[in-house]
Amino acid sequence: MSKNVVIIGGGIIGLCSAYYLQKQGHQVTVIEKSNFTSGASFVNAGYITPSHFISLASPEMLSKGLKWMLNPKSPLYIKPRFDIDFLKWAWAFKKSATALKVEQAIKPLLDINLLSRALYEEFKTTNDFNFHYERKGLLMCYKTDKVGEEEWEVAKRGMKEGLDVEHFTAAEVKQIEPEANLDIKGAVYYHSDAHMTPQDFMQKMLLYLKENDVQIYNNDAVLDFEISNNKISKVITNKQFLNCDEVVLAAGSWSSSLAKKLGLKLLLQAGKGYSINVKQDTKITIPTILCEAKVAVTPMDGFTRFAGTMELSGINNDLNTLRVNAIATSSAAYYQNLNITLEEKANAKSGLRPCSPDGLPYIGKPSKYKNVTVATGHAMMGWSLGPATGKLVSELISEQKTTLNLSPFHPDRRF
Image (cartoon, rainbow, N blue to C red; front, side, top):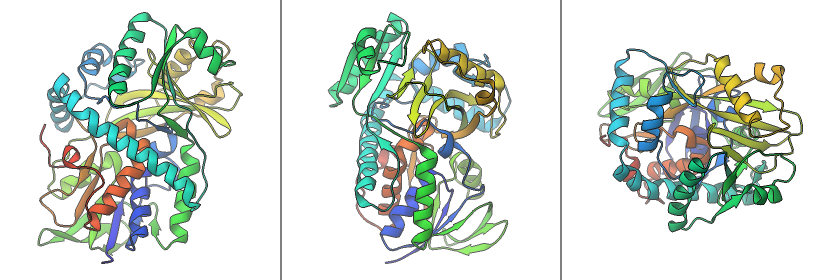
């Protein structure tokens, strides 16, 4: 049965949900408060990451985060502030950062990443639209033996789950990345990963949706909801009233404040990341994470992107030049010939990634409402998990058996 579905949020999660819902024959409307040119879905590293099966809420992140949290140049920066929502989230994060919970999250994270990679590759075969996509794996480059040993321990856990991983010396890295001039001790190489140019995909997906009768509204912010009998009957924006049979809450870091209007407790914090586009020919051909610096490097279509940092400072788009400079400086310590210009640093962008306390996304229907589906909280894996989330959302709304077990991602879960 065709339903009238309103999707709140026009990032990668919202657009992929729209794609699969229209394929199922539903009438779909996407509401986006910006103009489809900015935000995390446009400035991210473009990774599809089966390699990222360890939850963000890990004991390692907890211990390192305590050392880094007040250093504005560090990979993780927490702006000191008294905010009740942040304090609740931080307490839930602490409770989630245990070895047992990390282990329990491995299979759900790996399964949804592998599903999403398969769906991206399926996109390529449909000819619905063309986009840049390459599967060249991911290098985890390190400068110290200690970090190399830590990365290899994670890799061995991935190998138990069936991932193809190798441990390379610096000389072996040079054989597959001969002209990048890396100054490293070695690298862990995941064959499983792929990469894209995010804005390329977003623009082409948007055009496809418009051509296939999906209603798209930009610069249209949701203000409130009309509710009756545990169902949303209308979505109220600053421009219009929209009738609906189903609502998808995919508003990224803004999902928590919208959830409050529905009486839902959705613990989320905005994790700001930065990216710098470098037009010069860096000779970098394989996506690379600079482990100690926590910088992601991606050879995109026509440029190389350097992205990184996790800044918990509330919802704002302020650019912290200290953090931008830290990305550039630390990257130059790994690539001997790299010189990121003042202009490139001045054109850096930021995006807000919605982080749940346990590192797992929220995907599912909260028990309080009959016609609401939540799809947010993907943290640094939003790009990777876009198609899988969209397909799962479509299956829920179409009342089909879901491809994956959604209980680990349920929005009502407790921490």
